[in-house]
Length: 51
Image (cartoon, one colour):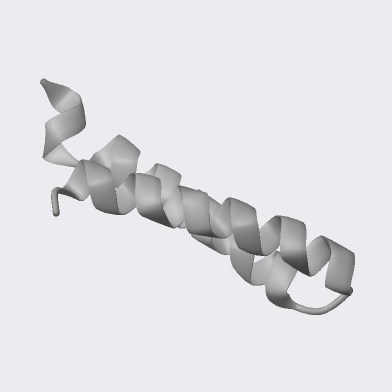
């Protein structure tokens, strides 16, 4: 797995958790939002994105 794939996996998992958590009214939505942000930061700061 590459850094790019890991970052997109975090973003996808975060989106799924955010949507599920928003419907379930529990902290899962917050965790999902944090995963999306973390995935975007990893994607933005990875060496592969600078090529």
